[in-house]
Length: 499
Image 1: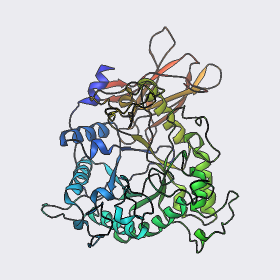
Image 2: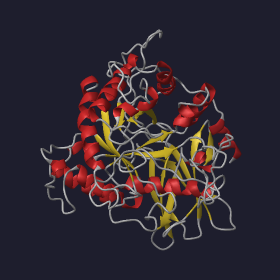
Image 3: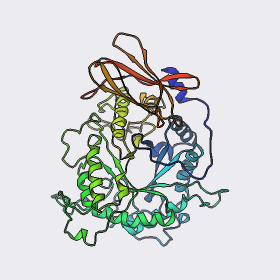
Image 4: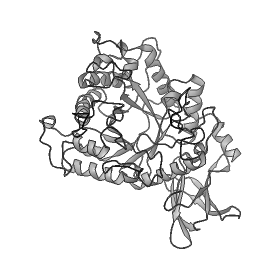
């Protein structure tokens, strides 16, 4: 275990490349690629920490990092009520210091051969809203002004843009997402036509206008870019539950008949190259919904329902057929410690994350899986509320930089469940590398010793799925071959109803 941790924490520096085109973001059916987001660590941390985080991710086989291009962070005079005079499609018209944080992360990721996905997202400048002067403006976002910002972002990262004072152009970014969790009031409003009754959704129709304007704006600059829409949260929680949001976005009712409301007059098929989604199961096992979940909520356990709805809406020409592909772009489990209100310890959370990836990999439409955060966020002074810390503690690292068990599980996740009598079904993956990869599965009965139950190769995607001897009390671990030695991952147990 200590040797494996040392290999992740240290190790030799990676070969770097300055090739202009990034690798594809999405993986194959049954072997989705991993996307990691942590704006705090990748955009706002010191340069040495950005480099260390990206080195850790690259060694772990992570293909893509997700960054936020915050509109209000980049825009000139974001707190002004009146829109300033400037060319909103010109990257040079935005704040240079704010761009530099994103530029640094993009350059660093691309040097390591990684792709970047950029969220064209929150918050809006006050002058681009319906007069929302709150700390986080998001009410009545102007879709045409958002489209101009989206074009500026796509231009800056088209692979040819040379920012003032730089010796060479910025690397290309070929994947973008339009907004973040528009079905939650924390990110877009108003959510309802009448907030007092919450009967008729409004946010899906606001978001449809945002997509209708921003999608062609990005494509006008980068015709071959991957532009994702959606980015929905798995639970409504004061907003619109995701399955209902999706139906309203497509202007159909709960029986999938066209809606005859003013918001849907002149409806045309929703554009997009893939559907982004955040299927969090933060307080329960990944194979079930949280207590109190509604019929239109859709955590990971119900990913098949989301896929089925996307497929039906695409077949009915309500969505672009490419929106059948699902890109999971956020997921993770907070741990206790450090958060005393989190339901799972670090080792158990690592177990759950591997199990979640196994579930996601069974849905053939899923192209990416996700890990939210590299490093735990601080709770902050006075941040403990009802026994829980504010912000998120779902990282690969504790706040002080110590590795969590998830840092070992990420490069080689493993899941085991009961099979026929005397057997267990095992799913695992070796993420780093290409093609077939050396792998070993070791098992131990309680009170016994570790023994090699399987040694061989994965398939061409790095996946292994086998039936091995074992039962309810069997413990397992996966080991990958690196540097001439076997590095074992965390110990997992056999789960049926939940760990």
